[in-house]
Image 1 (cartoon, rainbow, N blue to C red):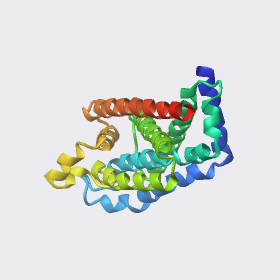
Image 2: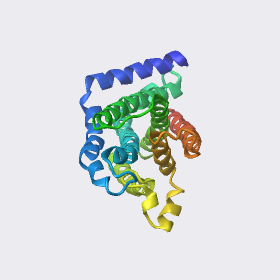
Image 3: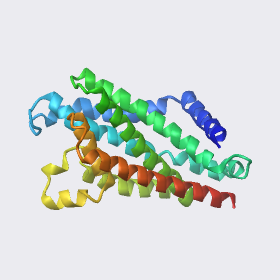
Length: 249
């Protein structure tokens, strides 16, 4: 079980090493937002400095990576399903959950490395973070990636069509992004928007990230965000593994 998971994890990491350009492209958008958009927020955040703006905006940019970087990982699986590669793996002697777990572990590791690069840019712009907050933020990124990547693989196995999956992901991505307050805090919006945001799991991860960046490690949003995404991640992972078993028949 553990050996099979590590084998698939190593295989997926090998694919990333052979094509390192795509993960780097994935962080370009959040970095550009940090450079070009965060300075516009200086007049809207308490304190009014660029550091205060980065403290509010950087967690949203990092969750943007976790959401968009992971939700599109399932597209490669659709191609493998069409070519019969995944079906042959599913009927092999390999432990079936390892096929999904290896991919999800690779996605979580790539997310953490991307988050370190984004935080490095924020540090160069003047942001300073305590190490405990940095560690918790990376763990929260990994938990969010666990959910988003598992959901993407589950959707890929259920839909098995690039166009259909693209339409579905884009349909949900925009309202989830806006209601999470990734670009601007939801607290700046009307009361009905703040109420609607509380039904969006990503809202809790962004708010927890802002609490961590503010140095408030004991804020109630932190355990709520970890609890929500660990439960959702476990459910999405179970669904994707069951979908793989159905593929094998």
